[in-house]
Figure 1 (cartoon, helix red, strand yellow):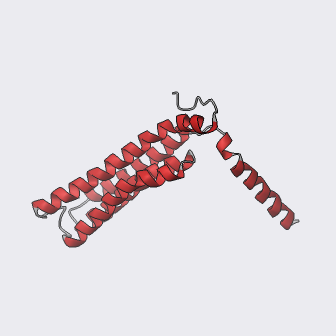
Figure 2: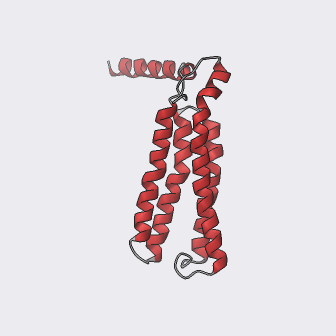
Length: 160
């Protein structure tokens, strides 16, 4: 009986996956989830950052915030089934995260007493993460139009 249930659920999952492109993308859900994935870690990272002058807490706060910014466009685009775009729009926040990890390894006190060159580099990388996540989330609004062009369907989901 368990094998039958497993086989039936596998067939149902494959049928849903096969017809997934026929359904209009849920743009509102995608943007909401992506925004949540961006804002909650950004808030948590900011709290960690602002709670003390400890460089380790600053590092942890930056990692938490930048990880959320990197995940936000991925989550949004995966929900609307645009997997290539998820990778494309995660590239800039991921590059900013990697750059900041390298900067904090080279100069651990960059957030408190670092020299101007590393502080500017740190800020540019952080800004790249914010801009990349924002553009990636904004691009999700066009998912219905791209779906309509691809499938010939008429979508209304992106028209808020």
